[in-house]
Image (cartoon, rainbow, N blue to C red; front, side):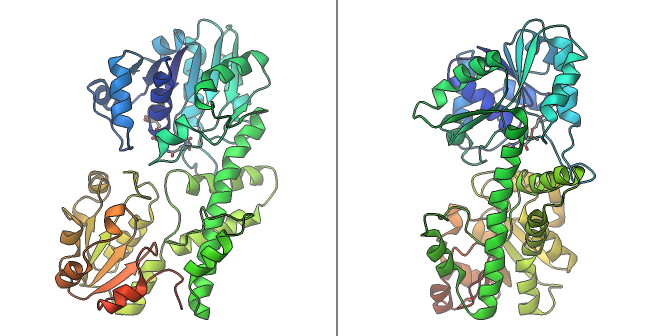
Length: 433
Ligand code: NAD
């Protein structure tokens, strides 16, 4: 099939590349000329394991190309995906400006029956809005389908190529056949393709993200309680997860969820409810707990040191989770800003997110070349993102180069007893035992 993907970000680039890899002819379109130029030269603008190789392979086979020319790309395509950003709007709801702008341009450009697929995360009813905008700009036949994306940054290729499920919102039999054919290569192991109406598809995406965020906030509340009663949340987590009705994923307490999706999606779902005169109380609690949790390491440091002013601290990990360079809404940024505001000096190291951090914070922080350089002379060390290389550092070397050996383990990756044996003062999350 000939496919155009509008929006070449994390989602559009991965989706376009994977569709090309299954034999389709794909053009990825973006308004960002620098991004498209880089991709045309073989430079991949985001860090995503395995993506570079797959892009190069498919670009060489001429199944994948990059363009800023939306009209030409859309007019020759049978399927057009919208994968532009849907950031938080002023009142917490999703800002649909980019989606509707893309829809208008698609309407002006289609020349024959086209399936327009909305992959961006959008509120219930957006497919209808997109349909109206396209219809106002064309006489040509088309269908609009909601096909929310569930990939995780850091494991995006695997998630896309072997999805747990594919959700497709459409009532058109013609569009349904096209979508079933397109996704057939990715669901050969019988993972379900779930067809439903577009509003249910749109809500499914938000509800799934809100549920995952709720599990995290719930565990962060339980962790807070564990600290107060002298229990260890890590035992509690294991005891809970062994229950098949609960399971282990997303039961890790920590420094709060970040990233480009959970924070805005929880807000957007609450905003949709509000537009319908409803308050989803649980979501408000999920958000409040997360805001508190993003500051939890800072609170622990303040309690330990009294004042942070004039002290030097190390931060290990900046990206909102391992295996990505994405720092959007990352908890690390709240911690770093808090340390800087308190008058501290901050030395940071992240395996891949340093260039992004430099663009975000400039020379307000010291960017270290490795984890030990970040720890040098520090009075406290914050583990924020659990990259593999932080899991088993040389603690003797770390202790030797730190000014005072105090560790704030925001992900509970270290063994408190072992670190205390080595002479560290250890603080974890919810480890009161
Ligand atoms: P992104 O910000 O990385 O990329 C969006 C791209 O769209 C940008 O490159 C931007 O220049 C481009 N764009 C904006 N308007 C355009 C237009 N009119 N024409 C062409 N290009 C345009 O965003 P993302 O992280 O890929 O997310 C895209 C959507 O997918 C969002 O709705 C997001 O919530 C959803 N989503 C994201 C993830 C994720 O992990 N990042 C996962 C699932 C769903």
